[in-house]
Length: 170
Length: 131
Image (cartoon, rainbow over all chains, first blue to last red; front, side):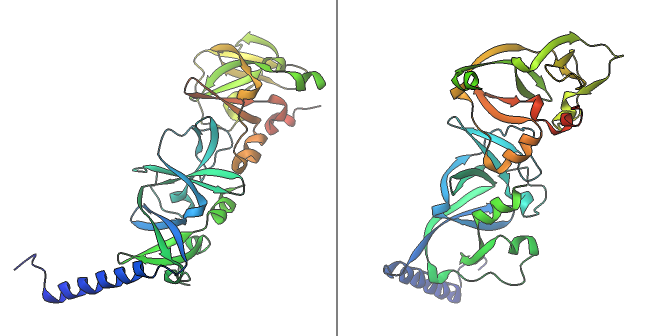
């Protein structure tokens, strides 16, 4: 019947659950925290230790010196921080709609907000599950991706905060 | 310079251009005059590379100690305020360099809004007028 789970699908789901349980049991394996988010139809992640906090997107104030990649600043409890439009950095057009969160990324005393669509998950991932980025990645993306990881049958590109900061600064 | 370091307050002339509020240290202002279309002027939005805008309440600002600078067209100031120096926030490092070239040196959060601090003497577009 349409919509009914086939036996083979049922078995595959069982295998998936079993593998997931195995991952959880392997407590001794070194892991890394990832903040997974979406931008347009793609999934990306930052390393958890590079993320200070996540805030709902609010009004961005344009100031002279703003660029295509840095549309302005925001006031976070009295501190003025720049906003990076990651969609534009990655060349994903029409990114000024539906963006719901600032991921406040920190690096060597600098903290900037990175504009993303939505937060998907925050989780610990075994380091062994991270793979080197494919050589076939588009050039702009390949300059920012440090690892890839499979999450619910989707490829997640793990991005380097330091490379993003380097890319947008003039 | 020592006197400036001891200063705890700054008096700002505040005006809005293209939806952005700017604050100028009143010590940089020689005078504020009515707009005269015959006068050679520079429009403020051109100094900061903001979007082109129409000046509904035009005024002419003359910069102090820079006789070679052209007169600057601004909108009529909405306020003259005193701010505490300690309320000034530096610009994010990632954009400080480009903002500085345009004369922007800090930001003051005020009543849920931001006042962008502008220094005529730092603005690259105006430096070419220096004698």
